[in-house]
Length: 131
Image 1: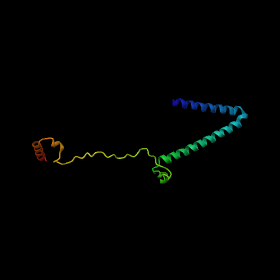
Image 2: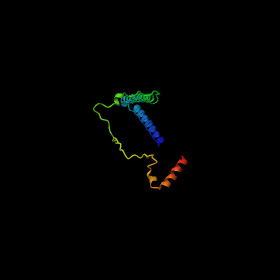
Image 3: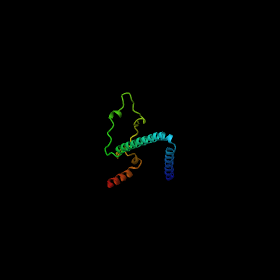
Image 4: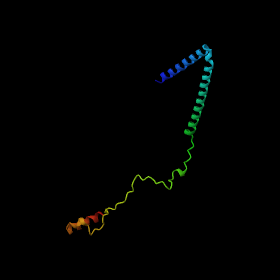
């Protein structure tokens, strides 16, 4: 596809050049007008290539430079007195719930209170052996 476009553009310029040369030599009254238009085209091409060269220079200096950009002034990041910061998230209020801490009192153990005193005594002995 690209080759077809390149060939088409090339044929267009060759045809235009041939037509211009033929008209320039055959019709003597159009020579002045053709010269003026060719000068305009040359000026435009020169300006185009100068602009293209400047653009490449700018791109090369800004994208390939090893120096890091200077930091932006802090003033731009600070809110003015009248400005309010955006609050997108509402602050969360801490809710106090029941404490999940386990009381470490062996005498008042509610699970052991439902057993008979002999069973509690055996459990306590086993716990002491393990400890």
